[in-house]
Image (cartoon, rainbow, N blue to C red; front, side, top):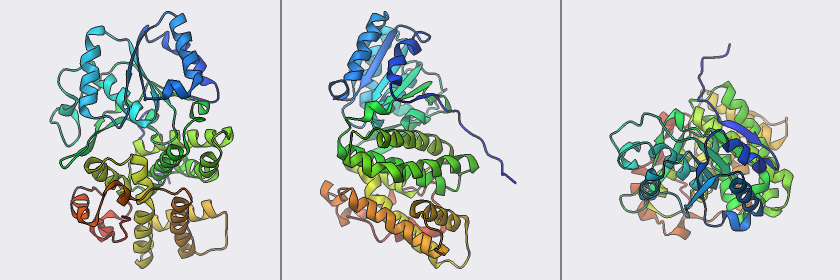
Amino acid sequence: MVNQFSLIRTPRILFGEGQIEVLPGLLKNMGSNVLIITGSKSYTINPMLGKTLVNLKNAGNILHFDRIEKEPSPDDIDRIVKRYQPIRLDCIVAVGGGSVIDAGKAVSAMLPMEGSVRDFLEGVGTRSHPGIKKPFVAIPTTSGTGSEATSNAVLSLTGVHGYKRSLRHENFVPDIALVDPLLTMNCPPAITSSSGLDALTQLMESYLSIKSNPFTDALSLQGISRIHNSLVRAVDHGDDLEARSGMAYAALLSGITLTNAGLGLIHGFAASIGGFFNVPHGVICGTMMGAVNRHTIETLLRQKTITIAHGKYETLGRLISGETGNDMHGYLKYTADYIDNLIDRLQVPRLAEFGITVADLDRIVAATDHKANPDAAILGVTCCSTYPT
């Protein structure tokens, strides 16, 4: 019997090589006064985007531009909204990595509203957003966050009292996700690596989540398989279109699964560490996923009762090893070793390189949420003794 579950809607998804060329036609139904939000280098390293701009102008669109060059802060969103509210925009198009898409999502949601975006952030503000927004198109140029398919925008304030919090509503899922693997071809190896590990973390956490369901499980396993076959190839050979396509698809799936199944302890750490320190989100996930998964697996191996989490880690071990001869304990250990070896293979920076020390651990742990981690009640954040500084 299949247990009850519900799903948050996905965007209208257009996936495949050359899909960027259909953008002018898509915007015809949204209006001609368009704000395009990009990263610092989107148009300089993607000639296809420059061509698309020309096509948009030739189609009669009035184009406005803004940039997000780092993980967006509440001040960034307030600035953009204040600038463009008087213009009566018809739609927002975000072209870039997860930070750019999160910024576009938040701007889309705040343009119809009064007040600061802080007022509506989870755990920060006190107001509930009604879910109204400007039409929004998300076009990723990296393969990582899956923000093109999620219902939240993550905003950061870095410092002693910093935080990473979400502006969230089911209606904030982009109206259109245009995923063209060709736009990721010029993504540098370090960003390909860190964003890819973010996608892998999201897929694994949503698969292992206590909120998962058969639908998200199926998508998660498919995405994990794609990353297993594509990530290292995409890092080593950025012009490998098949690998880039596999990563773009996996990242898209990760956005769908995390929206519907939630995330776990790794992203709990990412929220606290990313609030206190200026560390790229993908680097935090890549650094923490080895320690957290090994700790979880070792805790499960000490249990006498076999749980759903045991079975899921076993399935992961079978999937990535391609072997059929191990017992359950062997597959669990294989999974832990595989993650550690992948992190080493991709040369993920350690947190100490960003100024984090043992003295910071207590406040990081105190601000970290278990989220939907498997067996969170018995694992305990405070016993994660393999914290990788």
